[in-house]
Amino acid sequence: MTIYGFDVFHPQSGEVRSSNTNEIACWFIDTDYNEESFFVRHAYFLGASAPYKSLKTTLKAEIDEEAWESLYGNTSRPFDRPSTGRIAVKVINHLGDEVMKVFSVS
Image 1 (cartoon, rainbow, N blue to C red):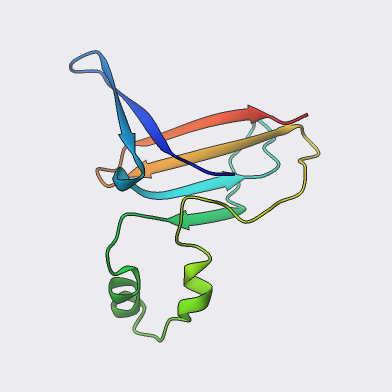
Image 2 (image 1 turned 90 degrees about the vertical axis):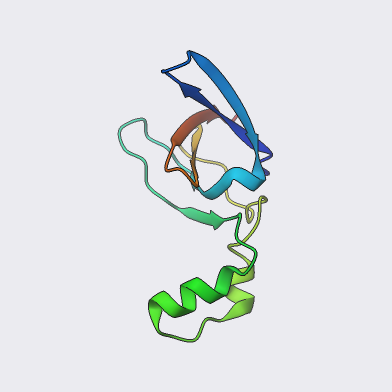
């Protein structure tokens, strides 16, 4: 799955604003969404020019850059077809706005 951007509704103005991947802080996939709760099965991060630096500082640990690279991008790793027939994608931007969309998979 590849994410290209997202839309956020702004209730003050009543408009929907579209954004590209530069505005995405992180995005998550529930690859077997049951419509009751969102379970993060895949997590990806975008939008930082030096993604390891702040994480390394926060964790006070060495970061495996190769492992991190697999989590840093707009295309997910492959996953099996969901038994529920649905996946859900949750996107969070740098302002903390959160949107979720459910997709049917046949």
